[in-house]
Length: 560
Ligand SMILES: [Zn+2]
Picture 1 (cartoon, protein in one colour):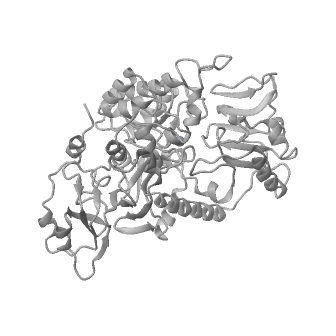
Picture 2: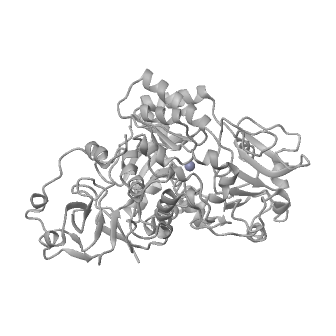
Picture 3: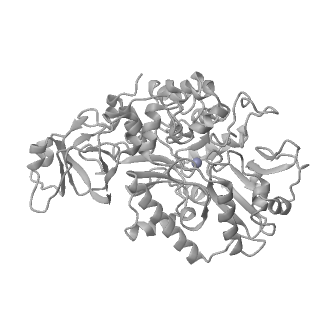
């Protein structure tokens, strides 16, 4: 079955409100006129105007009809035939605002940009110069395929930064890091150290450590070296500043709702109180917050339209797609010795974890990239449902990258909601040669999901992927990367489908489809004005559309 608009409309429930009735006796706060409005509501997919009151859409229709709702205090916006779409929803984001603000950034977080290894070393050297020896010097947002030198960063490069400091550069993908000799020495890792379960200390052709460390092996560095310390008040301050900063970035790109992977919940609430929270948050808890939810009996859905407990934070089952450590059922093409990626969790532990959250009424969420990991998650979800059936649980599979027909069938049967990578088709096309076309035809499989009636949403995974929805939509529609190469063209979806994935399907992912995700009377007035029509513009230019205005709850939070 195709995921048709009617399918979602039925889920939303209720009849289309009569426009005139909804509007009777009400002056709107805001009326948008003369626009190409793509509502993502199949009952009225295209209109030219709509009205907003008290933060919600109250009516949609033609310009003349909406003019009737203009009163003394009504703000009007003549869109001059620009396109308007619902606010974009990102269902997987680490929202690393304080990293962006306070740390050494060695790659471009937002767009494709090549850097040099010399430049990375230089940035870290200046950081080392202001850092006491023995204290970590760290770099973030490294991307191994956006390096002009066209080779991997290695231990020798990082030894040039310092011999007295432990030095690390983190890949933006979040599963691999590159260390200098001092760091490896302090962690007592040498070329004879065996790889721990779920991770590797990589070696060069001569068997010497090359500095790259993957997945669970990175835990060896957790308790060595000094890290800067902050008072509780300083930490709170930094977290507030980080969240306020990232919120500005989200709305700059038209993203109005974001699923946050954990983070400082207290700071988040303070940012909101101060008026600095510009986007809506589905808060995905882990650690002590998740434990507190379970202990207190707080289920997913608790909260309000600005900050709400959503699914759990991603529970990691395998490695990374972009860093080539995800768990495959077949060996990585061309890698010797044969390597199938990292499984980072046992089936028993996963079963227990899922059962516990599921029984507590909390939407489970697992990070599973490879087909092996997705199979493990489904096995655990099927088991939990059997032991404790819950309707409409929507187990979330973050990334859900490499599928096959059987996995798709089981995802559908479980009512699971995948949030595959969005911007990767464009941004990471330079990495897909490591998998090859046969595997790529089954990766980020939006076509397969939608054809099976699975409500796949968008998950940028920022920092790993840029969160720009324009880049995401272009990649989903073309499957062509920045380098002009096309991978897995069989997984292309239409612009209309890509828009749904990035809006209403995102709302469905957190059980909020009755509240947002389309321009429908009664829903939250979150929308974006684009400089041109994404349906008619050249598909290779979708990423260049300008975000003219971002509106959340009827209030303009960004404009050019
Ligand atoms: Zn993630």
